[in-house]
Length: 294
Length: 222
Image 1 (cartoon, each protein chain N blue to C red):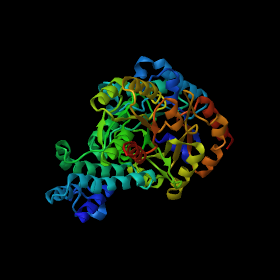
Image 2 (image 1 turned 120 degrees about the vertical axis):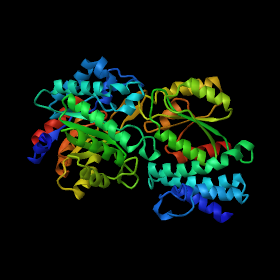
Image 3 (image 1 turned 30 degrees about the vertical axis):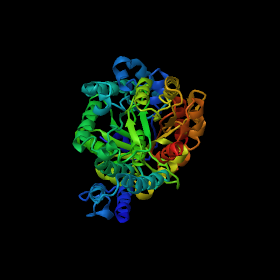
Image 4 (image 1 turned 135 degrees about the horizontal axis):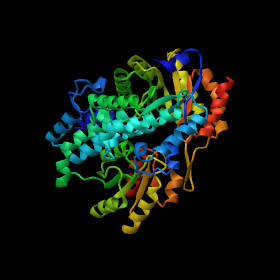
């Protein structure tokens, strides 16, 4: 129980993995294709991604289950296969992780807006419950609720995972840096508001993912720490913000660029450091190097 | 009458849907967009004036605030809800010709992309600024856009995408629309796109926020 948080409380800084979405695209995932379906039809490609990160030296690796909830899978007619798909995702990453590495079960947003009454609170709860149970069945250590922008949806996801599994529950939101320099999610939530609500809801680890490179994430970590000195913080940073030029999308930050901010973000209070869009095993390898030297 | 329309604009700006609604807290217990629109129509205020002097100023103010990061998606959605409540009372007057919309705007998220919040916000704000809006939804191909333009001559087309992998579809869609109906104005938006991309693919305009699109449309019909 609480294996990851226990390690953090002993003072360890842990490294998490990098991008999955951009990696899947590199392997040929087409626009309009269901990424989670690859856990069934292209399991060895999914395994390749997981093992790449394990070999880069991470302490934990995620699962290919970001869009694995009822509502997202419904777009592909796969909503009746939530259990099968998420369990498969977990099993693949579990196999790659072995016994040394932890597995985080990725749970992304449903894409439905509570405030527009596109979905009810109980429907959201059921969807997150179903997905979390399946991930646990496949062997994850923690439920990784991520890329959330709506605080109420995030809170419901945390509760659903906490109340229906024995896993540790992590939750990160996606913040943008707005005109005055503050951080807000698309729905107007600040890191401070997130901290209050999610700690209260029982999240074991909170933080931010996507939307920012490592440097800008430092400000988010500082804001969380101002309010709460002890809650473990996880950051999954992009390799900078994407540029589209001459038909190609590139993420500007190199592995060294990303690694150069690791010392400062750890000092600011981050406990788990990893990557999001545009990051590769090379990026993560450099992060591992810096963390080892801390 | 002026007082009534001034109040209506406030309801739109602050997202006050009706009297029963608890949002926003500072307008609790007051009439909302629903009641005021009905009262204005009963008092024989011209539907056109309700739109241009009541609804549109409110939408413009929230659009500017959103651009300036002073309010966020939830506040814009509440304003849009207030506006669509008012529009229910005005719709019959548009159909009868008593009130006119400034033009038609066709919008959709491109093929392969299921993201819709940006598109939905733009659709709501453009409608609140006096345009007829045809929202084709998400994952829309060239054929659907072309069909909609054929049914609505002189409509401006808006393309939305959130992913770098789907924004590439904008090039083909733009080209095919312009081949099928030459002279069609195409505007693009979404997190990964920019002005450089817009001109590269042969589109006519890029706006980074909903208020920008409204201003562009207004400049086109002026």
